[in-house]
Amino acid sequence: MRKMLHHRQISGSLASLGLVMGIASGVQASEMSVQHSTSTTQFRSIEQPLGLKVGVTIGGLTLIGLELWWFLFSKSKGQQAESIQGIQELNITVDGGYEPATVVVKAGQLVRLNFLRRDPNSCLEKVLLPDFHLVRELPLNQVTAVEFTPQKPGRYLFTCGMNMFRGVVEVQS
Image 1 (cartoon, one colour):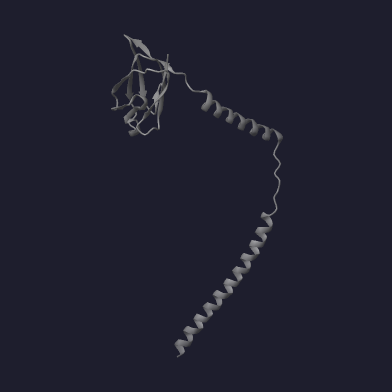
Image 2 (cartoon, one colour; image 1 turned 90 degrees about the vertical axis):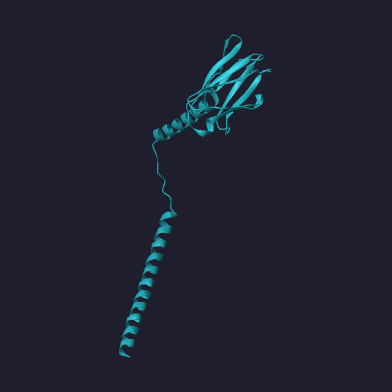
């Protein structure tokens, strides 16, 4: 009986201690939240020097200008295919895309595009010229010739197998 009473006293003491600690920490937490809420509801103005404001504005406008130039105006002009014995021929390197990405040819003449794939990316394993119904495998580190005869002037797309990398055949009259 005495042991049972002793266990009850210990359990009761621990429960009382837990209750007192819980109440004390709750009061402390509520005081902290009151202090925290009053300090965050008031904003302080941080005044910056005029030179810093102007510098940041000029820097931002410069970056915007560079992005516009890059995406709108930095497109390289197409490379004209060389005509050798009536065949318009051009070498295209496949390495993270197509270089050159724009090929300029004349309508009504045979075109031979020699693709040299250097990039092991599986996306670049094929080249598709959908307007000419052509699909060619591009083995790594080998030249693959793709021949077609464009009849009408226009811009004809060629892409990788996943349509992620693109180039253009620009046919002129």
